[in-house]
Amino acid sequence: MKSFNLKPIQCTDSGKEAVSGLSRTIRTVAIALGLIVGPGLISVSAEEHSNAQGTSESSPNVRSYLKTKLAGYDNLVWTGHLNPDTDAISASLIAAHIYGGTPGSAGPPNPESRFAIDACMADTPELFEDFTGKSVGVVDFNQTTQLPPSIESDQVVAIIDHHAIAGSPINLSKVVNLDIRPWGSTATILADRADVLGVDIPAPLACMGMAAILSDTLNLTSTTTTDYDRYYASKLAETAGIENTDAFAENMLQAKSDLSSMSALDIVLLDYKDFEFGGKNVGIGVAETLTPQDLVDRKQELKTAILDQKQKSNLDHLFFAIVDARDKKSFILWGDDIDEGVAISAFGDDVTDDMLEVDNVVSRKNQIAPAIQSAVATATPN
Figure 1 (cartoon, rainbow, N blue to C red):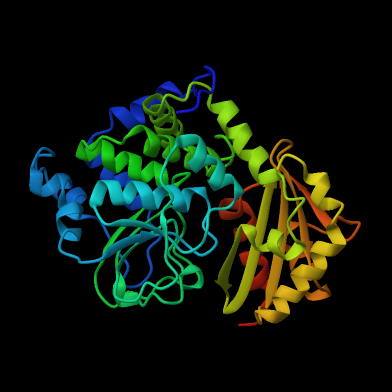
Figure 2: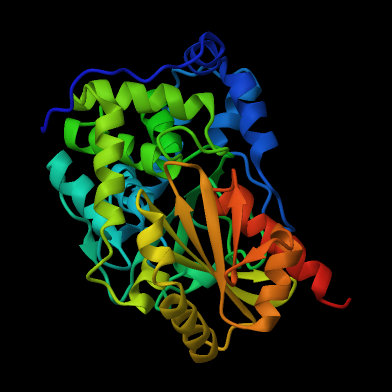
C-alpha cells in the first residue's frame, strides 16, 4: 500500500456518537427518513424491520438477510452507472466482497478511478459490455437513464445508492432489496453494512472505499458530506494504512485534472449522467479540477461539443459544469440559447463571457442537478 503521511480525518464528537453509538432502532428511523419514496418503492430491509420490532441484532437470520437472499441468485454481478466514477467502481468491489458475486463495471475507469485502483493496489472490476443472463446488483444509481442498455428491470435484485429517487427510477417488476440513504457516497453505506455484519474489509478495498468517499464529497468539503462519511473515511483509511488522506485526495484531483490530451467531447462525457426532469431528457456533465482555467480556456470548443452531443442524443437540454475543487465554485456551460435560458433560471443572470460563474456550488447531486430540475420544471408547461 502506498504511504500518504499522517493527517487524520476529523469527525465531530456528535458524529462519532451518531455512528458508533447509534442504536439499531434509531438507525432504522434515520434510514427510513432518508428514503425518497415513489409509488411501489417503499423499502425497509428485513434486518432493519426486525430490529425495530426488538429482534436481537445478533440473530444470524437478521444480520445476514441480504447476503442470504442474494446467495440464491446465479451469475450475480454488481455494477454502477454508465460512465462509472470512483464511487461506482469502489461500490461494486465492496458489495461483491460483502454479499458475493462479481464486481463489474459498465465502462472503463476514469483517470481518477485508475489512480485510486493503482494506489490502493486493488483489482479492477470486470468490464461488462453485455449483462444478458446476469442477476444484477445496482450500486450508486437508481435511474433508468443511467442503466446499461443490456440490463432489463427484472434482472435487478438489489439497489444500494445515495441518490434521490426522481425522474425515471428503475421500474421494478418485482420486490427487490433497496438500501438508499442520504449520505455522501455509496461506499459509506457499504462500509456501514460491513460494520453491522462483522465483515472485515481488506486493505485494498478499504482504500478504495476511502477514495470513493473523498471523491464524492470533495475531500469531505461538499454539502453532501455527513458525519457518517467522516467516520467511515477515517476508519477505512486506518484499515488501509493511509496516513494522509488530504494528500491522497489531492493526488486523485490531480489525476482527474489533467485533461489536456482529451477531446472536448470526451471531457464533457467523462463524468456525465442523463436525467429525466419534468418529462424532459437532460444531460449533465461535470469536470472537477484543480486547474479550471485550462478548461475555461477551451470554453468554445466545449460548447461546440455540448451542442453536438445534445443534438446527437436528441436531448432537450445539456449542461456542463467546470467545478473548481480548490475555490469551491463552478462555471456552467451550455450549447444554445434555450439552455442558456434554463441555466439563467437555475443559477442567476450574471452571464459573463457566455458562461455562468457560480460560487459555493460544487455538487451535481445536491446543487447543480436540483437547480436545473427546478428550472426545467418551471419552463415546462403543465
